[in-house]
Amino acid sequence: MPGSIIGRLCALAFIALVLATGPARAAEVHPGQAVYDRACAACHNAPEPGGRAAPVASLRQMDARTLRTALTTGVMKGIGDSLAPDDLRAVVDYLAAKPKPVSDDWIDGARCPADRRTVDVNAPIPSGGFGVNADNRRRLTAGQSGLTTASLARLKPAWTLAIPNATTMRSQPVLLGATLFYAASQASTLLAIDAGTGCIKWAARTPSGIRTSLALGRLGKSGPLAVVGGDEGGHLQAWEAETGKLIWRADPRHDKGGVLTGGPVFAGERLIVPISALDVAQAMRPTFACCSTHGAVSAVDVTNGKVLWTWHATPDAKPLGVKNSAGVEMKGPSGAPVWSTPAVDLKRGLVLASTGENTSPPATGTSDSIIALDLATGRQKWVFQALANDVWNMSCPSGRESRRKPGPNCFFFEGDSVLRDHDFGGGPVLFQAGGRTLVLAGQKSGDVWALDLKTGRKVWSDKFGPGTPLGGVHWGIAADETRVFAPIADPGVPEPVSASGVHALDAATGKRLWSWRALPDCSEARKARGPGCERAGISAPPLLVDGAVIAAGLDGRLWVLEATSGKVLASLDTAGPRDSVNGLPARGGSVDSGGLFAGGGMVFVGSGYAAFGQPPGNALIAYRPEP
Image (cartoon, rainbow, N blue to C red; front, side, top):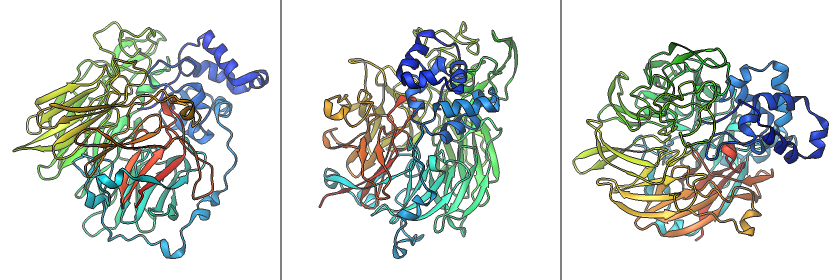
């Protein structure tokens, strides 16, 4: 759930913008500046600390395609819909970075030699998706990964592939033998890459950028092996793994306000697709009829993408008989988006999904929750709600202690909402504890939960730090055979309150085992690598390989920790400029979302995440242990 935008323009923030952008730009008076001042400045000039709005400096690092997509089909569609076509073009041109043109033949220049372009579809699949396996544990053995704890302590850069004009590396790849499949989202291209060298085996152009992490599996018992991902337009696509040929493209959403963020999951003859919602950001526009979209989970036929069933996180919204201060009729209930990757228990025929906050009242019992669904029918089996009455959208302050005043679409501010925005951004994890199965999950509040799979009842819980709209636990947790590992981001949370880092607990009992703190390094040497040194927290989910925990920070640093103790075995820095195998300028930045992956004796990091004011980047970096 990205995004930001709209509201009242603060004069002081406007002055700061003019000063920051320099005398030349202020003197030119670009026609898009007035549009920005009217529609965007209130949120982006002075974002709420720890909130979702990207500062204007981050917007200026994005290219025109990225900004246009956000305003026309993405998270800021509500704002884009309110703009005249000429105004939309003007504000995009005003904000967009002006990168040097890149020829479309950048792919051909990085092609593998003819004898290295084969994709072996019979090779082993170390990982089939975001959670590695359908249990979502994000765990690879030494045999699966080709890596050991000892070898991970000797990681060195092997190659870097630069994605042209990109600022965010959001999609987690999948690996098939020696072939890495990666969605170069901002280049609207799916790549099959030689894992050992970084050269490109094939490239498939996509109608719009792939927004989700990828999944790899067979389309039916006798069907082809396929790579599947969801795009910025809300469509799910399946490509032949061997050639990159598009097999099918389908829309799994129940309405056009849905958005695909979490990764799809193969479940036998079905693909499980989580569906998020856009209204949380669109509510920033006073004339927007807040709010009507809601989260969902759909199951689609793997052979053609046809929807088999859909579970709805809330009932359809209806007029509430209330108008906001702009005179617009309000609607509800809404929200409870599913923007995490579900877990699937094929043996018991269950799907485990997690939800976010309601975006308008009435509050439902399915927001900020873990949900168990029947795999065959989508029928709800049980629900565990971690936080009730969390009704929030981006016209609201984050918490009642915030000094920010509510906007028109926070019309429920005087009610009983806790206004926390404490979603489950990470999917549930299945864990075997003795004779029973637990469902583990981490929340943006900083809470870690363990539930009984059969009943949904709490077994234990713990809390690390105060939580923020960006985590706490942001994108998910990981678990091995005995432990669960919770990454904490806590951006903007001061010491000693912050819990940023990685925390290990006994998964069966909840006993704390160790904590490793990610502390900022703002030395002159690190500052020279780029901005963002003060954000050291861990937002991307960790990856477990053999006896090690691999974690990456919002500041771009990569850490290898010993799973038994939290001892640092290795640290590397992905931030800053570096050479690339395709000859384009490469730069690492923040690591977030699905930034980590491993297999074939290598570790892969997507470095750069320009959302929320974090350091941008365009580097897919591969690391290999020294002999």
